[in-house]
Amino acid sequence: TAKKIPFGLRLKAWWEGYDADELARRANLGQTSAPAPERAPKPVETTEIVATPLQGETSNITEEGELPIDPWDQNRIDVAQLIWGRGFCGPGGPEYVVAMSKLLTLSPEMSMMHLGAGLGGPARTLAEHFGVWVTGYESSPSLVAGGNQLSTMAGMAKKAALALLDLTAEKPFERKYDRLLADNFISLVANKLDLLRRIEDSMKPDGLALFTEFFMSNDSVLMAPEFRDWIANEPSRIMPITHAEFLQQLTQSNYIVRVDDDISEDYVHLIDKAWAGADKIVLDLYNQPGQAHLVGIVLKEAELWSRRAQLIRKGLLSYRRILAAKKDKHAGW
Image 1 (spheres, rainbow, N blue to C red):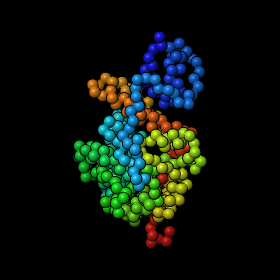
Image 2: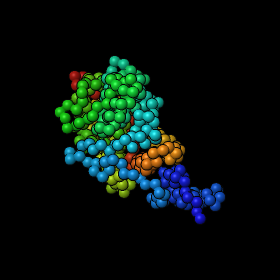
Image 3: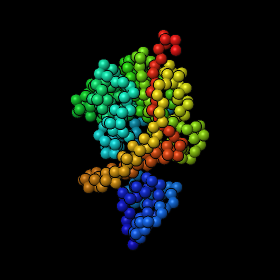
Image 4: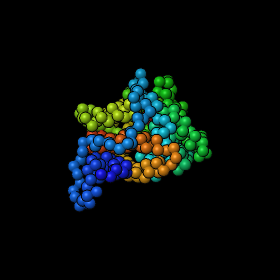
């Protein structure tokens, strides 16, 4: 009788695009020198572990088509922090956030808004490292509540506060800011040009804006099966555009681009590094009373990040860091 395939092996094989049953068979036969099996288009999951649907997956579009309903619940928040670290919902911990944000030349005298703030981990990191005052904006009430709780526990309730973003409001932002950081947020909004102009209106004359975002390589990507599968299975409605389109919209919104970096390779490396330890996380969950139900959420998150990473590897998407400066309307630019 064939041995039951360990979840760690199955997750690793699935993540890398191989057939887990074939890998296990070769391992049982001791064929350590055999060549890797052919990549399977989509391995069939046969373990008892079920990929639990994420909150919001079955109805994730608002009537306005602007921002999704809340795709986060406490289970998903707990799993995200197990994978990415306390207070984080995606790739890159404190060191990464500091390195990425040095372009903004932050200081204690400055105020900053962070779109796509998640649980506020990046906001607290920047406030602590640079002394900047950060307001994190999120469309998820669950993330705002959880993030503010973490900021309060860290003694940073005012220095790194989170606020619920309502783009239907006439003035969605609380004040004028010196700096902006937008993480994977532009692609969640249908009317990107309107959002960029509203951001520009909420920034001081010498404002700097840093965007990190997924971009389509070209318009033909829209018809690619892998791309359509990605869009259909995201818990939030996502509407990416091409890099060229975004640069054009920045110009139309009174910005001049200062830095434009393709950081796709580094981003995929961060994803792979985090998920390399997923098997240990699953084992720990099984060994903790009352935590086994989170294993299905881990698998679902792994599916999400695998799709994103594979699209970048195949060149259908790129991940970029773009620094833009607000133009001085009185300087004749």
